[in-house]
Image 1 (cartoon, rainbow, N blue to C red):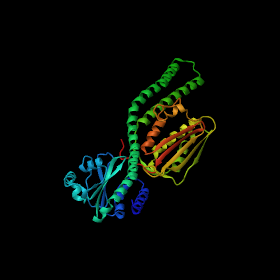
Image 2: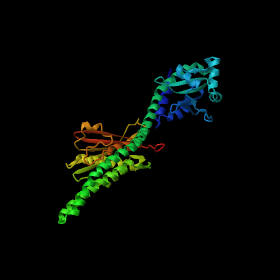
Image 3: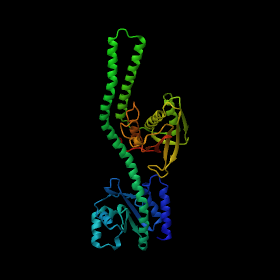
Image 4: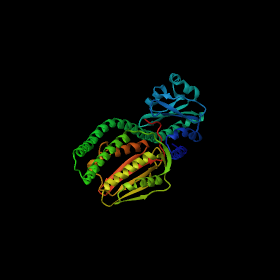
Length: 408
């Protein structure tokens, strides 16, 4: 490849690097290349997410309404098998007739001189159709080399991008179905949890009915125990209802520091006085997501941190930071880090953190972190936990904005 084409390649990559989504290049690249390559027109087709057909991305032919090209097309079959460009000028008449008959819409609307496959790891992910000047034919090898290098850089990024976004969405769909299936299991668990305190209440009521000389002090003592049993039943039922209930996302834009401050204030009375809460937030950080879901996760993590510290003097620090400029679906991830000074998590339990019904708390249902993990995935984010004997740090990571196409 000569110096001129290397410069064009460099400019192309710099152009792609300015995009929020690499896949945006498929819409914009043909127009960009039209200004830099010695061609009359170029049209780009790329495989759809379902991998059933090749979708047209056109700019130099902006007035055309091209149809997708099927996987079984003769043109696609040739590109897959040969794994090299099709130069129409060099093809035999019989093959040209088959190509034009297989995709008449394509060949009737476009002047097809050159078809260059976009390959990655030997798989066809797209192709470029080029109309050239006669004088350009001497540069076909250079043009082909240009697209060959570009596709090996561009295609893996697009596949990775699609996989990342689909993984977040698919994980949440699986989580939703998994959660519905677990409701039955949780109901059985709740019935068992409720049975014991109910039996205790029933015993005390029977005891009161048969006892004539019960003192006021003894009566209050037994009532306190009954009250605790009722609270336990209420907690189990609320956990079941909260877990099984689904609400659609309500997307709003808000500042992370403000969310953190409001969350701390809302639960301040429930945080023991032996625990000091410190915030180190970045004021400019603004995010567009479901405030209620994120706050639900944050509250759960803060309570976990408080429980981990227990009655000993301790500290919970909350900080925000930006990371992963190459992350998706946006270029940056906005993070909330919650760190406690508790004893840490036992190694034997670390692998079970996000599994349902796994808990180290005597009064826990084991659904807190499982629910948090699903909620973070529903927002296109993630939750990671790092723990040692010096404490545990939970990091909540979210893109600036993530809105699903559908809610199950």
